[in-house]
Image (cartoon, rainbow, N blue to C red; front, side, top):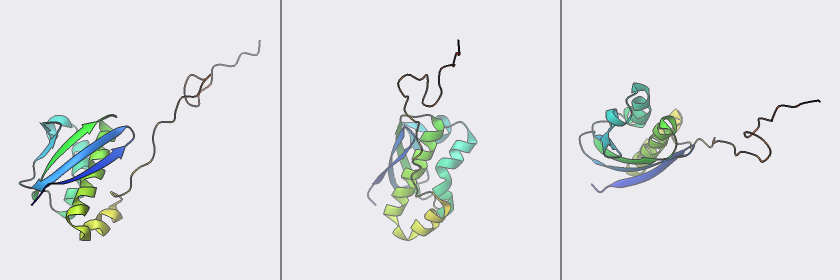
Amino acid sequence: MEVVNAIGRRKAAVARVYVCEGKGNITINKRDLIGYFPSPLLQYVVKQPLSTLNVAEQYDIKINLFGGGFKGQSEAARLAITRALIKINPESKPALKKEGFTTRDPRAVERKKPGRPKARKRFQFSKR
């Protein structure tokens, strides 16, 4: 089987995923999943699409991650893995869509406005 690639984004994080048949190894930026995401919760987020379809031991996954924080990176990886699995087997799309993995979360940081300390915060008002 050839390598299937996909891209996922969340906040400022971008994940490029390469999926091929294998034993279930997940490599992120040349480190294993446990080494890159020590938190079990983030490991669970990355593995969600695989466990939903019960194919965790069938594919080797290589992920290039950059930008954002660890939460955004894990969710970007989840979206990219979901898109790759749909490319491999289009019949799996309804199950993944039902879980909400196919939707790209559009929320991002609001830009800072001029004359303000942050996006919405204002400097302290002084009457006198």
